[in-house]
Image 1 (cartoon, rainbow, N blue to C red):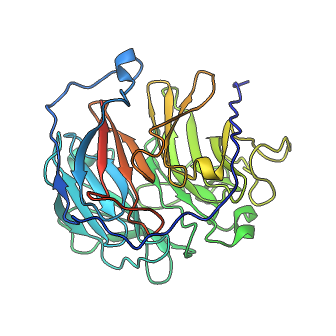
Image 2 (cartoon, one colour; image 1 turned 90 degrees about the vertical axis):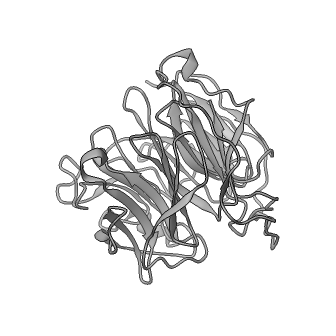
Image 3 (tube, rainbow, N blue to C red; image 1 turned 120 degrees about the vertical axis):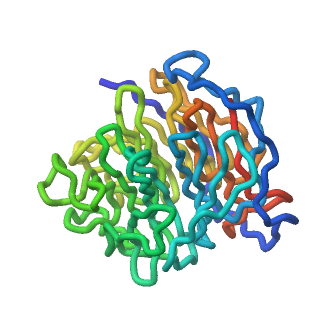
Length: 363
């Protein structure tokens, strides 16, 4: 049995502060470049990023959300409200707009959300995006030369909040998508509804072979708003999601399992549902992105304005960077082993400072 990790820190749920302020500079630009580095073996001590030595790679971004790396080590980042995809060169440098996803309808928590790069990108050049359209949330695929992306999955209920939106390829080569309940809680417990679920799809948007129910895209259910997906060195899958008023969760995701929302929130000791391996009060996290480096799971917190580290071998989670950069949205591990972290201070719930939003790098 895996060791359960629990962190119960005091906190009272409160609405995130809104701000009408904007940073002085809103043009994305490079702030630092880094020399090319050899790939770091994630299991080695060197694979643990040094969080005391941040490098600001890019400033002036407008609500960065999705972040995905190309095989050469350069990165694609989505700007939620603009619908733009920017390219950041290897080692940093001025971002260049390389694509605008047509049909993006921003508003509330919707817009251009997650990005994923095809495992066979070197051959097919395909990129995937999850976004909010006029009538639904959908997933598309395209090359950066395509004028019209191909819709591979549509009909996901949209909402002013809880759209989910994180997509990622798993070690098995299939595309996983975190889908929120769109504010309609009972959807999470309806196995025929894709909202409040984690989906597992082929690259054509079909239900992946081996899913718990043949022909269904649903991999797991009972989720409120999954925005973090990550896999450990042993291919264990982790899903990170927002709680309502009490507990945010880190879950081990297993096929066909039910994670309890809206019946339970956090650890419930109810045999019908899977308990989280870690939980935080919502003021301390409101977790979005997730990534694994070595044997540590990194979880970016929005309202909590901190980066949580969860040791996967046992031990208690630890808060890092608390209050230093404001709201933290996405965390990802680059091909060279460095940890990239995006802020989300211009999303209408933060207190943007000059230079926001930004991408930080820790090597």
